[in-house]
Every structure is written in structure tokens, then in C-alpha cells.
Image: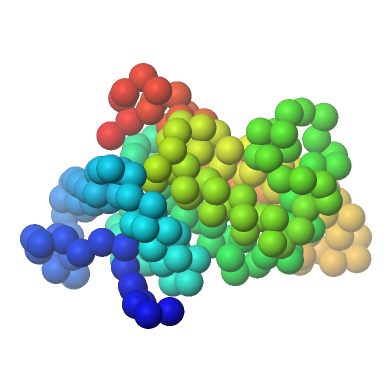
Length: 209
């Protein structure tokens, strides 16, 4: 790689310096909103394919670490809150691709809903296909239909949560600790899915900030 970008953006003001140490919660939330809006504005202006691909590469290789950590304190139903949750799902697939693929496929087999269709992963799911899905979602976030990208991310979370529940049931008698971990993961993913659906509706009504 000719260039290595540790972060997707370089801001000219002192936002990141102000994050260090104890920061007033209200200031932190304001910074989260400002950075989320600035990132989307920069990447979406002209929808430069090179900028989008560079950002996808950063997310794949390093995660959007500094800004995403700031977003983690944002309200669930806000622009930075939505970006944080998309980043979490991408990290799950990047760091635990094989496990995520197994859980996703278990969920797709168990769910009698359209969620697997909305997510758009061919069956059987493979780690490479899930990586492709999360990159497609990120591409949609930064250059496509933002609400649709959030809905696809929510569908992915819903299917994977269902798979985690199925896996927990199988492991309950013989591997109780793993079953508990799967149950917690399912609860987290279910919450993320619900929050992303709300954010998608808010984006369409122009109330997501």
C-alpha cells in the first residue's frame, strides 16, 4: 500500500486535543455530532470513489478508532450513534469473521422473516461474503442511500442475533459459559438492530443529527 491512513479524516481545529482528559459530557456529545457530520460531509461531497475506497480500507485495516471512540458516547438515536453501531458490526466481522459467518448462517436458517433477504448475503454465508457485506454497508453509508445502509446493517444484526440464540441453546448443557456469551451477544445485536432501524427512519424524516 503506497499510503497508510491511520484515520479517515484530518480536522484543522482542536477537536481531538479537547477529547483528552475529563471532558464535559455535553461537549463530548457535541463533538460526536460535529465529527460525524463532518466525516459524512467530506466523504459525500462529490462522492469521490477514491475517498470512499480509502475510508473503506482504513475501516478494514485499522478501524475508525479515534473518532469511533468518541461516537461511542453518543445517543443511540443520533448520527454519531448510528455510525458507532455500524462500526461495531464491521469490527465484529473483521475480527471474528469465521464465528460471525457461522452465527449468521444459523440465524438465516432459523428466521422465518425477510431479514436475510434485506441483509443480502448468499447462502451459505462465508467469512468473505460477510466482509463484502459490511464493506457494501459502509460504502452505502458514505456514498449511497444512508437509510438503506442502516437497514441492511440492522438486518445483519438481527440475523446474527438469531444465530447466537440458536448457538446458545445448543451449548447450554455442555458449554454454559459459551452459551452465556452467545446470549449476551444476541442481546447486544438485537439492541443495535433496533437502534439502527430507528436511525434509518429518522434519517428519512431529516431528524437524525
